[in-house]
Length: 264
Image (cartoon, rainbow, N blue to C red; front, side):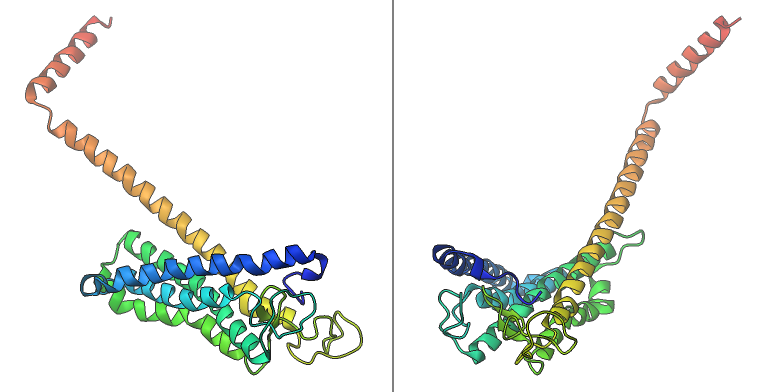
């Protein structure tokens, strides 16, 4: 768990490709997030009155920083790091990239808030957007800021170090031994003590919790929508029956009487 995976097992050309590709994908992600921000802000007088767009605005805002950070790829990694192509940074640039890369978790948190928003709109007694804004929205934004707290906590813990493809939560040196004796030879970690534990605490565990929670919410919302569809269909059938002319009812009644008379 000390690294995402080691680039030492790849050839020089492969390491070069792994370093260059994030520059492209990161730039595309930044452009996409900026486009969403522009689309919301250019019509802010109308869109920012709705909780949906305010949540989307927060998500896109943080995604710009996280995508830009990951898009820098190996550049911020300290110069001379073994097995890393394109490393031209310092410990300080690596720390900065790791901090902003950790903010990528804000996006899943805001996605969870969007799922909650849709569930509030679609439940048995749906809330209006005004009610959601007044009762729940402040808690939605506060909850989505938890990854920011995680990112800040990583600074004094010196967690942000080279993870081969970028800087993130990692131990330095990569093969050092933690105080509990896990992995590596005998020398202690200079930075990122117990990085594997903080990866799970600050990233993997919250991410899987969000995935599971969103899945449950979407199942609940799907069941609500299906139940409403069945109710609408029944109402339409009932409405068609009530709208039938009296002549049709009389015809049905005569046919039923005729059938009964023929039964011995």
